[in-house]
Length: 363
Image (cartoon, rainbow, N blue to C red):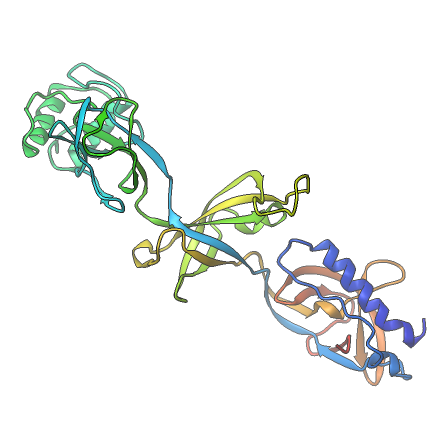
């Protein structure tokens, strides 16, 4: 093959690699003929070279995200009556704090996965009894309680102490008119009712979220492996501050990009949604739904040989190679491709060494 044909091989290689990586972390630029550079050489050498490097290579990529709060849900009423007090929007309600008030009696937030759905009294059994006893122990009203699923006389005595602390009748029984269970502290996102409205079982009182900040990101399905749960990330917050975090969950069910598709009937790109939790949520500032940037670290290969992506050649026999320049001569070396990232690609091949020169398009 003549030297005048060589630049096109870079174009072909770049286009093939770009096609293979479409939607991935690497960005590959195709280089075209500009009437000068390598094709003007008559000695078989490229007009421009770059260096084979030995380095740690990471398939990092950046995606847009939205700063918010975790787990939005409705908090329904349990007490029957007229709402006489509601917390402010944005308020954070913790264990043993009032979540709303009906007919002048406050309903108190305790922690538990199961909702408070029945009257609890001596002789009752179940996981809701267990979580009530756990709260009474944690709050110091039942230090000697065994945390099990049986409502005993000891449970009733501990409950009476808790009721006394809140000015309630000390009956040793409780239910939805006194307690609302949530898995953790909550933040009030929206009031679903107003003071003066009637409330009761099944009627939404508040929309709440978790109290800690998180980021939600959407990724192409092809990039889902970059956001496996536990993957470390760096988040750029409004104002430029940076914070560390980890992917908490990944919804693999997929969806579609809801942005304008320029007319009905066109294909929409499939997306997956990931939730990112902060390592230190207390330091995170920014308004709800503020835009942020998340850098996904992806995979890292340590101490590998790399070349610029545009150094790759499409070989006539198939596969890829690089043009090694050594001792005033150029030769093509087939390479096996590894990780792409940071504009470079991991390569391995016979005789390749750190510091060697390889041809690149003269752009």
